[in-house]
Image (cartoon, rainbow, N blue to C red; front, side, top):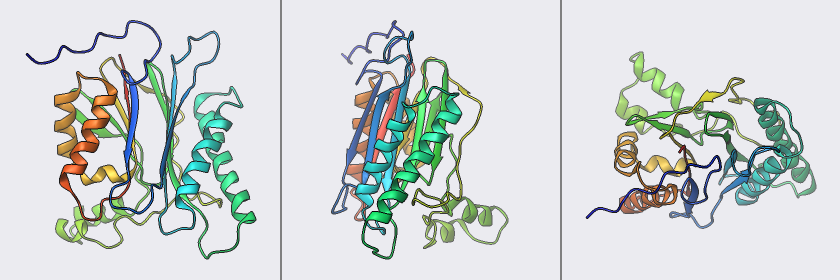
Length: 269
């Protein structure tokens, strides 16, 4: 007999591993340059863990200290988030600026190596009713709802511009898929002025049964339809098993240049 679905969470608090979890693999890279953190984003008198903060950073491998940059940026972001109680969208934006300023400060203290330390960052606050996010770079934030997977945040790589050339007939899809600049970033946290920031001011409404996934770009080893089909089969299980299944699927593909992959999953009870 198939396993019974997990008991529904009838409290107002998210339950670790059941409702939220994250996993990561190093892939074929020498170091793990991704870093993630969950934090309690609730404020009294709200129950603990009634609101979550998830942040994922993907350090830039071509830059000095990619693994250090993601670690520093994510931790600085979480710390700054908890230092103020303003409106959620502004709270996320100020935390992003604090993370970028921290990278700038440390870059000034380190020997010049030609490229500043850098990282992408996607972060979201999630309650049972609403989602806010801020992101810089190409790390995706997905919503899975009613058997459909949708990317919520903007892609700050050159991929959208290249795909636009396909739509207007300037390039074939095969040329676009193999374009050498496809994954070049237009924006990242480098301790400098941030070129592009995705930070909607209005909350995104959530429904019971929704899945929120924040990841590094290593997840793109899976095609969109593969990830969508996997979530269709696994949506009734727990968040930890969903994260495990996604990374297992990535491992099975055995891509010879597999990047670091980090997957954070939040289920809305």
